[in-house]
Every structure is written in C-alpha cells, then in structure tokens.
Length: 373
Image 1 (cartoon, helix red, strand yellow):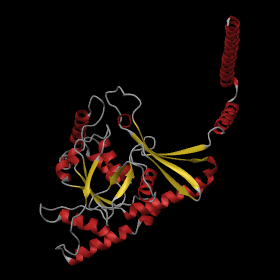
Image 2 (cartoon, helix red, strand yellow):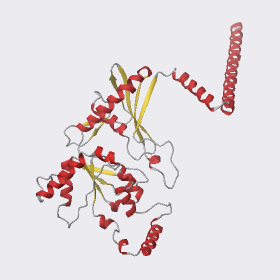
Image 3 (tube, rainbow, N blue to C red):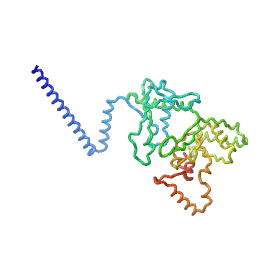
Image 4 (cartoon, rainbow, N blue to C red):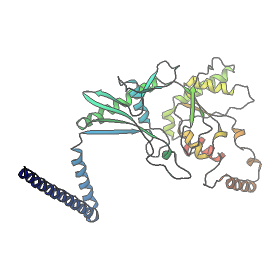
C-alpha cells in the first residue's frame, strides 16, 4: 500500500511540474506575441499593419462560419428612423410564416388587417432559395449611466435593431438577392397595411432629451371636395393644383427644389380652413401632422420634429400669427429692430447656450431654407 501511495505522489508531482511548464511556456508565448505586436504597431508602416490586421481577421473568421448583418433603428447620429429598419420590420411582420413566441400588435384594431411584429429579444427563421436565415429583434440598453447636465437622446434611449445571421457560404446570395427581396416585400407590405394617421406633437417632448415627438390617431375625417360648400371654380383650381404637384416629383428634382407645396389659409374661426385641409388630405391620401408651435421649445426642437415627419404628408401650422410675433418688427425702424433683435437674443439664450423658443428666422429656415427638404 505504501508503494502505491509513493507512486501516486510521484505521478502527481510529475503532472504538476508538467502543467507548470506548459503554463509558463504559454505565458511566455503570449507575452512574446504582445511584445511583437507592440513593436509592429510602433515601427511597422501603416500599410503593413493593415495587411497583418486583414490576415488576422481572415484567420479568426475561419473559425466562425456565420455572418451577421445589423439594421439599427437609428444609424449613427441620424435624427430620422432608418428606412431599412422599417422595411425589415414590415417584411418580418407580413412575410415570415412563423413569428416567435412573443409578438406585439402593430397598427390599430380598426385596420383592415392586423399585423404582428417580433417582440424584443425574439428570433425567427426565414428561408430563401435553400438558404436558412435567423432574424432577431435586439434591444440594447445604455451601457452605463451618463453623468451630464444635458444628456443626449442617444445616451438615454434604448437602441433597437434587427439582426440577420446566415452561413458565410450564402453571403453572395444574401447580398445580391435576399436583401433586395426584403426591401421589395417590405415596401409592398407597408403599402398594403398603411393606414393614414393624424399626428400631433407631444407637449412633454423635449427635442434634446429623446422620447417620442409625435403621437397619432387614425385619420378618419369625412371631409371631401365633393361635400365641401365652395365655389366650383375655386375648388377645381385647388384640385388641379394638387394633382399637378403630386405628379411633379421629377420636375422638382430637375430644377433643384424641394418637392413641397405651401398654402396660406386665413379667415375667422368656423370658415372651413380645417375642413379644407382634411379634404386635401383625403384627396391626396396623405397623413396630417398638426404642429402646435406653442409646445415647441426651440429651433432645434422644431428641426427634430420636422425631420421625423414622413413623405406624402401635410404639415399644418395653426394660428401662426398668434404663436410668433410677426408684425411688431415690421413696424419698427431698422435701428430699433436691430436693437430689439439683440435684446431678444440675449433673453432667449439659457445658461446652456440654447434657445428657449422658436424664432421667426428659424421657422422660415424650415419652410424655405436648408431644412425645408
């Protein structure tokens, strides 16, 4: 018995010494590689470093046979939701035959067809010409709390995205054919399931701190040009003008102007201004954005709201003469107007250097300036 114990102790000692030698050898090898890499970064030319990095990526990818493509809701610092994200959501809600275990309703109960979308952290499987693809809805929370008096929207909001994973041997098929298929089907699904909406800006929304800028309800106003009491010639003139505008997208692009049209409606309350807007929206089949300027806190806030609007929509700014001081400056002398403008600028700047309210110049910039497109 004693001999067996001695033999076991000897074997344990030999194994431990071998393990220590292996660990020491591995540690020295890693240290050597790190030292060589540090020297390479310091002394090798950039072109050679890029080549080494490319070889390293190829070597690592040989051990990972799957490729993932991500479609973020907001790419980089973009204000507007990515169109690719919206098309992917439409495609998954209408074309993937089997959604995940947890889904959520998209749209209104009064819609002709109810659409379901993937819930967060859910995964579904799609197939395309023999290729198998895994779609996942991912929500990423901020990694760490941001200590700032004026945190950005990106730092406060969760980041949503869709991810598709597939075998790398299917990459050419996915990039050349499948993604185009997703775009076409997603756009068609969006047209089929589109329900026109009436939007209004949220009073509690601050453009600098994130959140939802617009709330919406289904647009179901019954007004049409057929039911409006209006001079027939004026009615026909407006309808013809709207038709010409709707068909003139290429013309506007050719002459270098934003594809938009403006109307100034004035008159006492109850004379049919809102009814005319509703009839125009029904005639064009456009959404309506009812912009309340008194709830907009700054020019940057207004910019974010307008960027979030969609194409084929009517933006209504009501009581603009009551929301902004449009007439006082016109009656002033030039020197008085300049002094008044300086005083207003001083009053409108906060400790953070941001404007408190929308200015006339800011509004005009969004109507006819760089941001009008």
